[in-house]
Image (cartoon, rainbow, N blue to C red):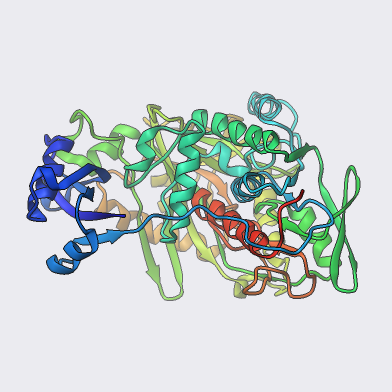
Length: 530
């Protein structure tokens, strides 16, 4: 047990030791009462025009931490308990190993926890292992054919492996610490434990994913690549087997962590009567600026200060029931070609750990609700996304190039004829056009209204030559596969919908946490395999 002292504001030249000293003094302690001390979190604050570091410091004391917290009664001093490691407590026998469908963040962490506790999970992944996936992605980026099963969306690590490894989340679940511990143990940078906005970087994250997969197999698990779930077999309302591209696989427990782009699997599950419903998501574009523009807009006169991270932002506004916001911001990154179906264009963003590219990019998205669909069926959101992606494919030249427009032209409603200082980073090439007709009218209108407002919040954001690349459609799953409080499907005992694809997460951290939650449910009911 330890205590956390938060909100310690120091000058930007301060050292970690300065913050630790301040924390000790705030608690009225002397050094011999402190067993250990370290920085818990670090962020930067530029409000009111002055740059500060803001620390949270963790102290482990020789005395009674709880008594000290009660005596101080300060909102910035709290007790921090130890987050316990999940343990197998169930006693029901499993006839077959549990099956985890998908090797993205949710499936990866579910399988890892199960393997650590002796359940020998079988993991099914429709795409290929990381080295093969890299080759397929590189080939597609350089103008080659799209592999519909091994690409930016599918393969070892899931969609999150080619993003940036952003670990910021708002869920406030103690399991986040379990995720960070394991990422660190498998090669993630130590700074993810202390940064307020931690990230790993695509280049390092891919090695972390491979390390976790190898640990799963070392502990008795099995990973089957190029294996797609094509259906379910049930008996008396309980899961009995999975139909897969490799044949029928007997199982009584399956975790369905298939990701937000497994549209064919959504369709098959729907045909088989698995309860699901349309859910809100967002669509929009990728916006690119030169990173130096973002740095100046955020840091002002402090731009270039040693130790400052590349500038990143989150901007949002709401009009009635609809919001417009930035998402998945990638400092010093690139816009990537993220299609997973032929004849469609999808964009996403990616950064390496150094975040040292010329451009910054982010999704700029507008919320979509099931009320926006002509058809209110469970898969109407999938159809909505596909229509936009086909339109982007046509506008981009029918060769997986992307439609591109300068911000100034987008705001004026006219096609772009030339680029300015910002050059698009999308790897398949682009066609200058007008993005307004490609977007739903409500989305185009709200984007046009919001960009100038965001420019007032962050100078340079609405620059005429900032670049918009279309379209961003996979911000989250358009489907929620219904589950009960026990996490099981209400119509099929033994099936656990999980993660972002099932509609219960958004991003690496929350998906990994949901995977851990699924593993815990299995572990509290069933005994490990002998």
